[in-house]
Image (cartoon, rainbow, N blue to C red; front, side, top):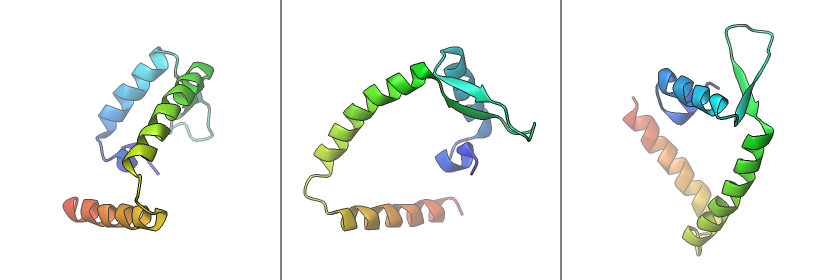
Length: 89
């Protein structure tokens, strides 16, 4: 799946963001068979930042989802997906 579609943003936005992340040393290019695609992966520095940020995200998610069952969370995600699909039709 294309990143721009997944994130619901324009391709140039993703390109600018990925270029900036590459300049900062957080992602790096991974050669592929198809020259038309550009695969990227987190660099060592990017993995370090991700791990640090992930802790904060996990704590925040735990806090805001307190009292909401896993089934309720799954159903909410499904419903929000349908709403997004209806908006983008």
